[in-house]
Length: 251
Image (cartoon, rainbow, N blue to C red; front, side):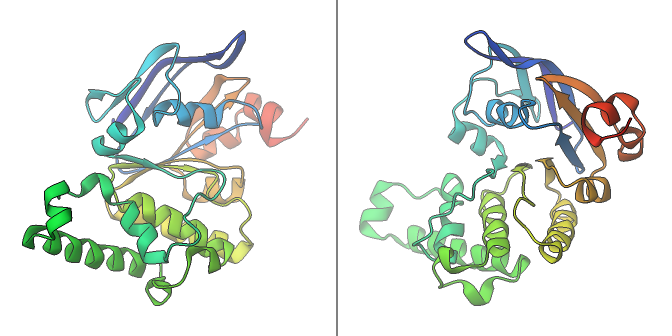
């Protein structure tokens, strides 16, 4: 397993947002986290990525305990994420947004930056080349010099994913990546997720679009009222009576 979430509990005062959740994230797969609004899904991702410190339990990533680590430390360990609300630097160019995502992997120090040493210039050239290759990955190279805010909604979503990939993660957390997308954009996202797996990057995503989830996820776990309700393959989840009653709908 690439990541193990073990008996994680997160409280806000008397409110238990995540209650003793245990789940394993397999390497090289798409794992989806689903559940009704308010089930604790984003809170769980926030604890994994360093936004919140859990009240109990731990998160083990790639063999290391990352519980309570700062966000930049978790990113350096190989974990990246996107957010429900698009979080781009809208007035910066598309290319500059991708370069921002690389900052935890750059090695130049203050001296190199001030005096523009050969090492710093080479690293900058290499970073630009890699950023352009990533933009090729999502067919945005032609927009590299445009302000990020000028992109269509779907392209902004893809740019945010690429910015996450720019830190060369082992695992990327996607918080509702299909939110606001039209059917064509969702089909393109489905294809992009499969390409990400082909790059040996594991995916953990929150998503409400069940067609996308059932089509692309290898494994699903379900939260309800902060607790894990069920886990399994897409077919197992689709036929789980507790999940049907709580989330998917049915008698």
